[in-house]
Amino acid sequence: MKRYEYDVVVVGLGPAGASLVYMLRNSGLKVAGIDWVGEDKVWGKPCGDAISAGHFDRNGLPHPSGDALMQVVDGALVYSPSEEGVIRLSGEGAGYMIDRNKYGLMLLREASKAGVDIYLRTRASHPVMEGGRLVGVKATSEKLGEVEFRAKVVVDATGSGGAIRRKLPESWPTTENPPETDFVVAYRRIVELDYDIEEPDYIRLYFNVNIAPGGYWWFFPKGRRVANIGLGVQLGRGFPHPATIYREVLMKRPDVGREVRIINEAGARIPTRRPSKTMVWDGFMSIGDSAYTVDPIHGGGMGYAMTAARYAAETLVEAYTKGDFTARGLWGLNLRYMRTTGAKQAALDVLRMFLQTLTNDEIEWAIRKGLAGVDEIASVFGEGELRTTPGFLEKVSFIVRLLGKPLLLTKLVLVSEYMRKAKNLYLEYPEDIRGLEGWVERVENLYSEYRKAVGIPF
Ligand SMILES: Cc1cc2nc3c(=O)[nH]c(=O)nc-3n(C[C@H](O)[C@H](O)[C@H](O)COP(=O)(O)OP(=O)(O)OC[C@H]3O[C@@H](n4cnc5c(N)ncnc54)[C@H](O)[C@@H]3O)c2cc1C
Image (cartoon, rainbow, N blue to C red; front, side):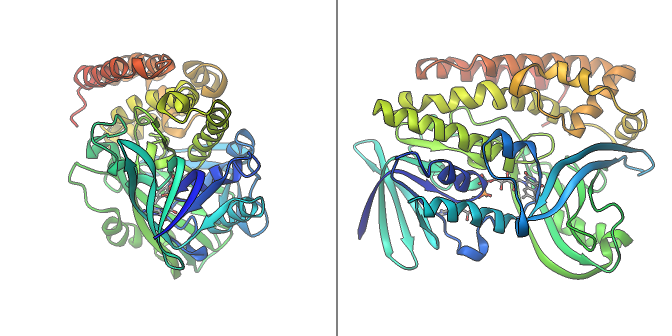
């Protein structure tokens, strides 16, 4: 068996892993990136392909351009269940519809030019442990056969499957088994349509629990005639698979059903919950979907995968300088992520559970009442990095809170109280590994107390 030595091996080259190898390209570290797909399938996991422009600036990544940029997004239309209530959110150049494959390949090529070794068609099968320490991963490469990649740090960026993370020793705190209801399964088609899409620079989100229970369905134009159309459905509650709903319900709509051809169709799971309790352990990091860094409300995960990659890159350089690749030496990733983006996502996880209990009548009412001011919302989420553009559902919840239906209002007062508590708990993420156990217990207690207080049935 071949054996290669690196400082860092990044397993999975989707938005998290490709961003990380790109960010480490001039770090002085010896880096390898591996993925089981070939060039044509890089970043090939199904996605809505929509991303806020802010993620690129924030994380020092090039904005998509040329073939990688399919559509500039100038706003979003948000529909109530009857589709008579519509909220129009405008923001010129607020986001992009991207060609994931082209953007991902660009990052990998730049990384490779700068000396990062990229191994495609190479499947990592399991971690290599020696004396209780993680020292690398075993992989099978189409070109090279069986390979052992030895590294000071193995980064799991394999998406929601967590291919390496779930094979680490059970006693490690990286082991986590969240309930199924913390995930949605989403399915989408990229289709060519036989009509011109009106306002292709506006993405559309539709909230209707009869179509997308525990999620929403979307219509995201990629130019005048091509659209990414899909839906997400909460898992663990016995709802039908979104591919079935797509075929049986959405295809009956003229805007969806008028397909000339299906360019691509696929589905996958999305973790729509707070981040994992630790993103690091001895010689190990996880980032992106593998560490549950997706926004719990809208399920967008590309931008936060990039954010996690940035914090991982900063931490790896720091660890290298100190020569400490233990959990202690890598702890900076937890501190950087949990106390900023993670704190926001922990609060949104509280809100997510509540929103997944709303009926169509309640959603209809909230959307028709219009929106609360953005300042009001921003003030709830605080300063600095927490103050990111609020997602639609956050706004809906605040409309409800401001304009009030008595029962909803009572619940929402509780929801916002627990959002604040969850955020504060993540802001108090332990300074070092010794505080982890106690902190995890406080988090678990808080969420179970919340479920009881608000009557979350899952
Ligand atoms: C239908 C759908 C729609 C979505 N819409 C949006 C959206 O519009 N905007 C948004 O921001 N997010 C969206 N998301 C979420 C987004 O796609 C993910 O959050 C994002 O892709 C996560 O990036 P990642 O790098 O962590 O994981 P992934 O994109 O899953 O990448 C993981 C990589 O690891 C590789 N891999 C896995 N196992 C192995 C192994 N054993 N060996 C080697 N390689 C391996 C895979 O081939 C893959 O390339 C959507 C998700 C779905 C399912």
